Structure formats: structure tokens, C-alpha cells
Length: 300
Ligand SMILES: Nc1nc2c(ncn2[C@@H]2O[C@H](COP(=O)(O)OP(=O)(O)OP(=O)(O)O)[C@@H](O)[C@H]2O)c(=O)[nH]1
Ligand SMILES: [Mg+2]
Image 1 (cartoon, helix red, strand yellow):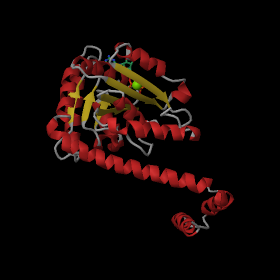
Image 2 (spheres, helix red, strand yellow; image 1 turned 90 degrees about the vertical axis):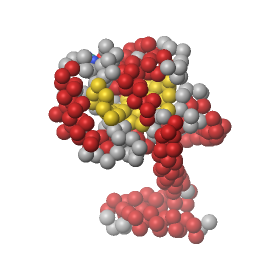
Image 3 (cartoon, helix red, strand yellow; image 1 turned 30 degrees about the horizontal axis):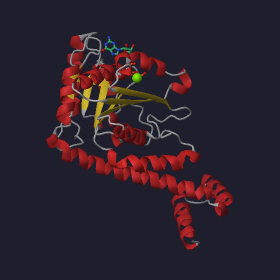
Image 4 (tube, rainbow, N blue to C red; image 1 turned 120 degrees about the vertical axis):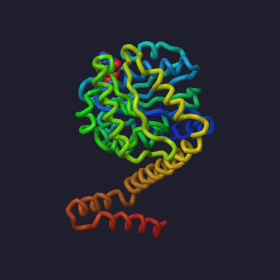
């Protein structure tokens, strides 16, 4: 219900969200991003089991933008998260973004809230770091882990600067394959990260070296998560959430305005004329926008 983008589901969605809102906000919201095949899902399986051993209840939300074309690795994800998917303290929700190329499900924030209201105190969001979508992982979680393959040279060059800029932890994955390569990768990443201004005044981006196969480094990675969410950092995290709520509001406002303009009976046909004038280049887009909102106010 909460993931639905059908207009007919909107009223029930709103009711549900309003009812649960006061029971949300208590989870650690963790995002795991990185290039396809970097080892994100497998890492969530091993990191998630550590979290559960520490007494947490874990929800995993994974968006798979490739599902539409490849038939989906969603079954694959269940396969990759076998211990988690059968654990009573874990909830896994893979969702495909059929027909859309966004890296995050459109209702990801709402989904996180529902998981929190259901009593999950750690929510992990997996996304491919495609970065074309307007809502990025850093807009919806408190902490971003970037999973990075150990072929460091390529990764440091290849990873979009954008992703590194909001990495709170970079985890070099698959260290069991070639440990010295992983060590070298981590040290190159550390120097690359030191050149980037970190998102938080009280958190300098860290690196970790992990193998989800042997479990090496996974406990240390969880310890870093605990440091990030330490009580002393609560203010920073809340400050970030305040900004996120503002952005969410502004996005929703734009969406609602566009919806309204499109559905206004009297403008239904004129909006099409405005669109073609804009496409033709005969009307300036920002001026058309301002005029629509203006004409609307005077017609109320
Ligand atoms: N040797 C080794 N292989 C790993 C490790 N982690 C993941 N893999 C393998 O790498 C492949 C990709 O792993 P996934 O966890 O599916 O990677 P992903 O980043 O979630 O991939 P997408 O969701 O498709 O972008 C799988 O075949 C895994 O078995 C690791 O620590 N060591
Ligand atoms: Mg995956």
C-alpha cells in the first residue's frame, strides 16, 4: 500500500502515514550504495546478522532499477540474504522500479517510516549508485556506506565524485580474493577522502576492509556504525534529518503543484498549449510557471 503510486491509494496512504508518524524516527537509517556487483547485498547479509546478534531488529529495503530489463536479481537477493530472510528479527523488502530508471523507490521515505513504526530499529537501504535520480540515498538515510571493489585505481577514478562526497564509510569489499589489493585500495581511498570535505563537522569519512565470505572486518564495520550513531552524535544526526524533512516537503510541494495544475479542469487543455509553446521555445519556462501560479491565485 505504502509503495503504491496509484492516485486511488493516496487517501489510505495518507491516513496510514499520519497514524504512524509519531511512532517513527527511532531507527538507525543506513544506506548502502556502490556500483553493480560491488557486493552490497552480500554485505547486508553479513552486516545484518552482526546487527541482529547485537540485539537489533533489522529491515532491509532494496531497490533494483535493473529488474525491468534483466528480469531482476530480486530472487537472487533472497538467495544472497538467506540467513536474514529466514530470521524472525529481520524483514527484507526488495522492490523493483519497473519502467523507471531511478535508483530509489519513489516511496522510499514512506517505506522507512513504516518499518520504524513496525519496531525495526535498524533500517538498511540498498541502492545502486547510479546517481541519475533526483532523490539520492543521502536524502533519505542518516549514514551512507559506499561499497567499493578492491580494484582501487579504477574505483577512485571511476566512482562518481558525487558518491564519494556523501560517503560516511567506504567499505572495500571481497578482501578474501586479494588482501594486499584490498589494503592498497583502502589506503588510496583514504587519501582521496581526505581531500573531500565531509558532510558532518563531527564525522570524518572512514574506510573499512571487509569480506562477506570469511566475515573479516564485518564486526569492525558494525563498530563504526555504532560510533556513527553514538549518543554524542545525536544532535548532528537530528540536524541532518531536519534538512531532509525540508527537502522532502519541497519535493512533495512541487509534485502536488504539478498534479494540481495538470488536473485543474479549466486548465486541462490550456496546459497542453503551454507545454507546446515551451517546447517550441516561444515561451520562457520559468515565466510560464510563474504566470500559471499567479493566474491561479487571482482566479480563486
Ligand atoms: N569472494 C567474494 N565474493 C563476494 C563477496 N561479496 C559478494 N561477493 C560476490 O559478488 C557478487 C555480487 O554480489 P552482490 O552482493 O549481489 O553485489 P551487489 O552489489 O548487491 O550487486 P547488485 O545488487 O546487482 O548491484 C556475487 O556473486 C557474490 O557472491 C566477498 O566478500 N567475497
Ligand atoms: Mg544487490
